[in-house]
Each structure stands twice: as structure tokens, then as C-alpha cells.
Image (cartoon, rainbow, N blue to C red; front, side, top):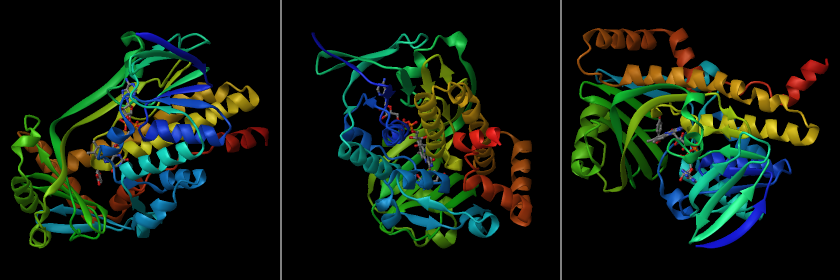
Amino acid sequence: MSTGTRTRTQVAIVGSGPAGLLLGQLLHQAGIDAIIVERHSAEYVLGRIRAGVLEQGTVEVLDRLGVSSRLHAEGSIHEGVEIGFRGRRHRIPLKTLVGKAVTVYGQTEITRDLMEARAACGATAVYEAVDVELHDWAGISPKISYRRHGVAYEIACDFIAGCDGYHGVSRRSIPPPALNIFERVYPFGWLGVLADVPPPWQELIYANSERGFALASLRSPTRVRCYVQCSLDDRVDDWSDARFWDEFRRRIGEEIADRVIAAPSIEKSIAPLRSFVVEPLRYGRLFLAGDAAHIVPPTGAKGLNLAVSDVFYLHEALRDFYRERSERPLEEYSERCLRRIWKAERFSWWMTRQLHRFPGDAFAARMQETELEYLFESIAAQTSMAENYVGLPFGPSTDSLRTHAAA
Ligand code: FAD
Ligand code: PHB
């Protein structure tokens, strides 16, 4: 193996998912140099189908970066969301209740927009970097090393941002005794299908049926994204398109079922459901952000949105460090993130509990029915759900915190 170059940057970012790419752009806008190192190719990253629902706070961050023109042209604004139960659909009017809406625009498209913005500003992103390792993050001179096409590279930096998802190397580099892990694994997964067909629904439908959960979502006026709760033992090959659509129709409610077109899938995958938080998010000069630090079950549509608030806080803390040599926002990063993370964990756990079938727990089944009845009858309960679904506020920026302190 030949030895490649040694380079230096201010912030080395591991992972080019939404967290890593967005942090890269936020730092670039703040005049801070960063290099992104990603294990897969850019095409592979763009091929992953994941989130679809964006909170207003997420859209505002993308607006500030000037990377949202396609989002506004092609995304759709949803002012309500529906819950299906016992054959009926109940609408939660988000905008009416809390004055905010959500935007439906695929994570893949955000990733593409951010990759293009990064290329346009000439910032470095290294794809197909294997054997990424983190070094000396507990001291003041951290480094990351990797191999690419058989050549070894090293990047010296001031800080490392671990934005490499749940299975990444960053969290694994920290000695286990230093990690406080909180975890809940659910006894089912989601089987998702993407298909090019106009959706026969205008707003997302989260359905709790006797056969299990189903979600009717979309990506555009000509593309649907649908999910059904499945067994953890199921494999994608067990589910032909015909079997998927048959099951989806049985769960989503008669009125929609009659209009569902069983179009061929262009992507089909199974995701296990998990709640997971690691505390703290800072280890010396290594900062975890996004799925590297926490996982929510997708029922609340919070994972990508949380990754955005984490990196927003992280860029503010790094910006203050370089501008004013102020360590305080870096010290507060973990706590600031965790306050928002735990509330999103709570909401995602609550949505998951209310909408899925948990076999063999009769008491839980009665509580679920009662909780949903209460939700449909109570404006207060709907307002609480709406407030969480559209996204809790990011909280004051470090700028306004400083203004407060000075006043
Ligand atoms: P990732 O997207 O996982 O990116 C991490 C990157 O790091 C990857 O590109 C990976 O290849 C790279 N990497 C990993 N290991 C290494 C390594 N060793 N070296 C270098 N690079 C590495 N969220 C929402 O907000 N709304 C939704 O509607 C929603 N729906 C979802 C539906 C499903 C089915 C799923 C599975 C998730 C959904 N999410 C949703 C969650 C959302 O997709 C994730 O929370 C989001 O991708 C997190 O972004 P990230 O950048 O932190 O991690
Ligand atoms: C999606 O469109 O992929 C989606 C929408 C809402 C969710 C989860 C996933 O809660």
C-alpha cells in the first residue's frame, strides 16, 4: 500500500449523509474549513431511500444556506395529517392547531442539493474512503486516517464531527464505559415500497389496523412511498409487489384501498425500529451528531429533522469557538442537543406505541384504543400531537443567548 498525502483542516467530518453534508455547508458559510470523508460512493449515498417529512425549522436552515430552491419548487406543503383507526380516518389539522405545516421532500433530494452546493463552492468531500479511523480525539491534535483505492491518507484537524450514522465508526471509537446508552428495540420492522404512480391521498395517512400499521406517504404528485409493519424475520424477497399491495390495501382503509394502484416497486427495503440515545454527544474534540448519536423509530418522522438541529447547534458552537475563542457553546453542545433529542424520542415512541400492533399484551391494546379515542375527541390532545409533529422549536441561538447575557 502506498502512502498518500497528509492534509490539514479545521473540522474533519465523518459521513456524508444529511448531517455531514449540512454541517459542511453551515461551516463553509461561517468561513470554517472542513473535509467530509464518506465510506460509500456519492451514487450509493444518493440511492438510499429514507425520510420524506421536513419540519419548518429544517426548511428554514436550508433556506439560510440558499439550498432550498428545488425544495420550494418541487416539495409539497402539508397542513394536516390523517390517522386511520377502525376503518375511519381522523384528520389532525396541523396548521389550524399550531400555525405550522410540514414539507414533503425526499431526503435523497436534500442530499443531492447539498452535494451540488458543496461541489459548487469547491469544498472537499472524499468518497469511497475505507477503513476510516479516528485518532487522538481526547487531546488537542485529533486526526483521521483512511485508505482510498489502496492509498493511505491522514487528515489533521482541530475537531472531528462524527456524522456517520448508527453503524458508523465514530461512536465505536469511544471506549464503551464512557458511553451512557439508552435503548428500546421494537418487535417489528417497516417494509417500505417506492413506486411511480400518482398517490390517491392528499395527506399522509398513518393507519392502525387489526393486521398491523400502514403508512401512505408520497414523494411527488407521481410517486408514492408506502410502508407496512412487518415481522423482524421477514426478508425483502418474501414480499412480492403483489403481496405488499394486497397487505397495504387491507390495512389502509376501504375508501383508499379501492383507489390504490399496485404499481411495480422501484425500491423495497425493510427497516428495524429502534429508540436509541447515547449520552453525552461530546468526547474531547469529537462531537457526535445525527443518527450516530440517536435513533428514533420513523413513525414520528423525526430522525432527519433531529440531525438538522444537532448540526445547527454544532456549527454555532464551532463558529463561536473560531470567532471568539469561546469554549462555552462547545461545552453546552451535548446538553443543548439532548434537550431536543429526548422530546423527539418521547414523541416517536408515543406515535409508535399508538399505531402498531404489539402482540400478546391485552392491557396495552386497551390503552392504545383509549389513547386514540381520546386523541380524536380532544382538541388539547390533537394540539399536543400537532405541536410535536411539526417540530418543537430549536430554542434560542447562541447569538440571542449572548445578547440576553449582556442585557
Ligand atoms: P446517515 O443518513 O445514516 O448518514 C451517515 C453517513 O455516514 C452515510 O452516508 C454512511 O455511508 C456514512 N458512514 C457510515 N460509516 C462510515 C465510516 N466508517 N466511514 C465513513 N463514512 C461512514 N427522518 C425524518 O426526519 N423524517 C422522516 O420522514 C423519516 N423517515 C424515515 C423512514 C425510514 C424508513 C428510515 C429508515 C428513516 C427515516 N428517517 C426519517 C430517519 C432519517 O433518514 C435519518 O435520521 C437520517 O438519515 C440521519 O442522517 P445522518 O446523516 O445522521 O445519518
Ligand atoms: C416517508 O415518506 O418516507 C415517511 C413519512 C413519514 C414518516 C416516515 C417516513 O413518519
